[in-house]
Amino acid sequence: MKKIVLASASPRRQELLKDIVADFSVVPSDADEKVPENLSICDIPEYLALLKAKDVAKNYSDAVVIGSDTIVVIDDKVLGKPKDAQDAYYMLKLLSGKKHMVMTGCALVCGDKEMSFTETTEVEFFELTDEEIDSYILSKDPFDKAGAYGVQTQGKTLVKGIYGDYYSVAGLPVGRLKRELESFLIAVE
Image 1 (tube, one colour):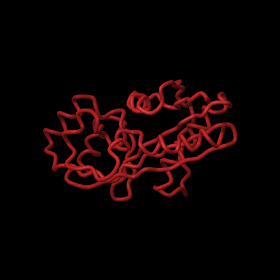
Image 2 (tube, rainbow, N blue to C red):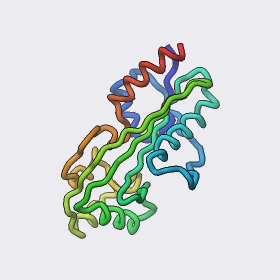
Image 3 (cartoon, one colour):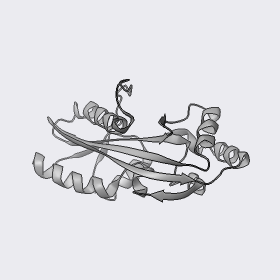
Image 4 (cartoon, one colour):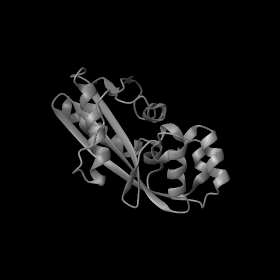
């Protein structure tokens, strides 16, 4: 069986991948994650996932490299990771009491073969008070997460509902990835 490499430093993705792959290496990508201006919002997660996977695959030509990227989208605005507390506050205030989309792109690369997909899930937030937002920001939880929250950590208290794949919101749609990886491994053997 081919060696599996996860092109991500995310502890959440590593933990989720353990549920479907017994043995893998972690090699974070150093790719410049600049997105072309003409790229549609729907294509961003898949583009970035493929960019990361290809970057790592250059040094692991005989392995299957998995790349992933998650964005939060509300009112046609893409929310990445907050730069600071003020940015986190802005994002959480924007999401308060509303529904938004969480899009996670995944890519599989092995040699010259590649495949990718995006899983989209709708998330609804409770109406948040300034005190709730400030308290959450003080926890430091928002700072390494798209949209300034983590559904698998303290951010779960902000979420009123999830409509779609919970694990996609957590950073890796493991159900679909398992099936795509099984097909991909057959194609590259």
